[in-house]
Amino acid sequence: MIKKHEIYKKDKWNMMTVEVQGRYIILREISDQWGEETHTFMSRPALMQWAEARFPKEEYEDNMEEWRSIMAAFKGV
Image 1: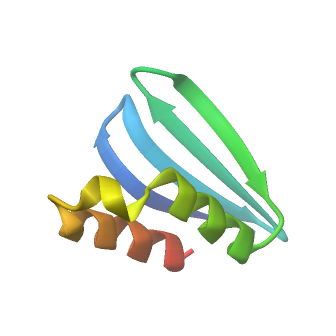
Image 2: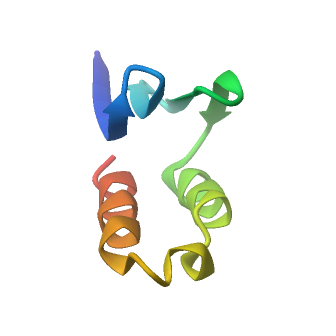
C-alpha cells in the first residue's frame, strides 16, 4: 500500500511529495530551477535529518509559520 503526502505545493512546478512504500520513503521534489529530484530514505529519522538540512530554520526567520508548516508536514509522514 502506498501512502502519498504533499509537503507543499506552490504550483505544478514547485512542489514536494512523499510516498511511503513499505519500508521505503520516496521524496520527489520538483522545482522550476532544478527540475525533478528523487530521494529514497530507509527511515523517518533519516527523512527528518534531510528535511532539517534542506530547510534550515535560519532561512525562515522572516516567515517562521511557513517553516513550522513544512516541518509539521514532514513529521506527519
